[in-house]
Amino acid sequence: MHERVEEFLALEPESGRLRLRELADECLRAGTTDEDAADGIARAGLRPDQTPAVLLTRPADGGLGGRLRRIADLPESELAQAFRLLVALLALADARRAERRRRHHERVTELLARGGIGVLQGPAVDAVDAGDAADPAVRAEPALPADAAGVLPCPAACWDIGARPEDGLIHESVPRSSPQLIARVNARWHQLAAENGLFAADGDFLLGVEGPEAELQPEWIRVRLLSTWDPAGAAAATGLLGSAPGRPEFTTAALDGSVVLQVTTNRSTVDVYALPHPRRAALFATT
Image (cartoon, rainbow, N blue to C red; front, side, top):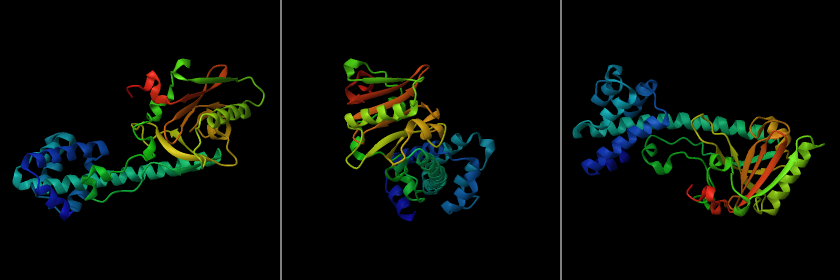
């Protein structure tokens, strides 16, 4: 923390003030609450009677967001204390969020294993320390393979493909009345996946799953099929990849973003879509 404070104090006054306001906003986005006040003050090494601590703990001064911004606007002589407090609050919120993500990742891993899908890489779950929390470069973020960065839209954008045959969209349907529906859907998905390059050399691909919190968008995780793979059956039954066996809803993508596949259940059919080079489609042109 000491080195971080020294680096902060070396900033020009306006730059330092801007950094404090950014930290206040980051605290709110990360989920800082009033209940973090006592731990944040202690972690920052402040006394309860020092100005930033007093501002934080006076609910009469309005909502938490307003109080954090007032801390960021304290006189120059108190900016170091303000910085330490905001960094400590952000570290607490980040640690709490990282723990939620860790538990969510464990749940997703367990449920997908029931459907024969192994999770190799999920969202980052490591908490950061109080010093590193001030540096956005080390904040925990969803893990996306480097070769897909800037190429692949988030799963939410891919969910409703909405592309046309002229975009290269491939579409196959399996009637829901079909005998062995689940096996047929699995086979059609796997064939389209193999033909269009979904699987890396080691069999890895991306799967879109719900985020750990309602406000977060679905996110990509890196997975591989196990010998018992059954996305349209056992995996759909978990609620992650559908609503019931034979009612799958899921989106997959190649690690490099070169193809997106979607399986979705309609009134009378289960539809399997493949869209090679999704960035070329008009839907993703400005995503």
